[in-house]
Amino acid sequence: MGEHGTGKNVVARLIHALDPRPFEGDLVTLDCRTLDPTLEGAELFGSEPRAHGTAARFPGPAGVGALGAADGGTLVLKEVPALPEALEAGLLRAVEDGVYRPVGAGEWRRSRFRLICSATESGSGSATPGPAAEGFARRITSWRCRLLPLRERRDDIPAIAERMLGRIYPDLEDVGLDRAVSDYLANRDYPTNAHDLEALVRRIGIRHVGPGPVTVGAIPPDERPHLAPAERGWQGESLERAIRRAVDAGASLNAIGEAARDAAIRVALTREEGDVKRAARRLGTTARAVASRAAAASGRASPAAAGAPTERRSVVELPESVVLETGRRPGSEGVPDEG
Image 1 (cartoon, helix red, strand yellow):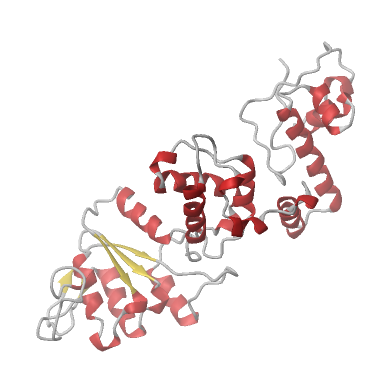
Image 2: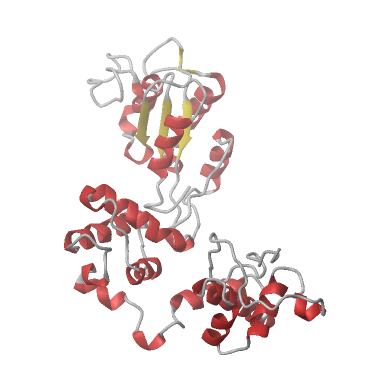
């Protein structure tokens, strides 16, 4: 399940390719929205040649239908809530018992297949199926996966864009994105998710010149009004989005402030490569306050605060893998023991 452009077809192909179970046949896709009601389900179940004037419209060999063509492989039913109610019982029989009967045929046929169904969510997160369709979906479903829209995984957008850039323009495979471009892409809206992002990446890639990273100059002029206004500075959409998530989660004003202070100290220490004094100057506070706060965030008191004798040091050693995200749970990135 997922909105338009969240990769439902891509995931279906990955499941078909990577599932270790012995389904080595073809992947057959049937869009339930395009089923012709006058064919009585022949596109899904197949048909005897005499039952309909032509079998050329059916998947697989003439008259076989989707279930027959998917034997030993994978059947992908796109937009399964649109499946006509008259065909539900036949599909359930095929799923549960592995048998189906073509239109106009007297005998049952066997088909063993992996079934993958998709349904499109609206932008509000609600799915399209109504109560009746939802009941049918529960009977044929053993596992569900909701694919997140880009607005719920904004931190991944720059990496996805770089991957798209390298795929669309192979000459730019090793070209990264400037920080300003990454921030712009991460904060932009994408109504149809990957479809919108790919269209924008195509326009950016064709404007990029030179071997260096992609800079804001490659952003199409008509897209530049979407850039965050300069007067908002660091108090932009990213910060508001993180605070909105915290408020929606029930965090108190004090907890949000504590998290912001801890995040600021971690960022400053990372920027200054662990030097407490330089981090303190950057934040306009004392080195003792930075060291104490960093130690408290890691779940332990600093040696100085505890009164323990210690060698005077101005550097707090941090692992290279420390990555800072606004809104991360306080204390999730601690300071390791100095020893």
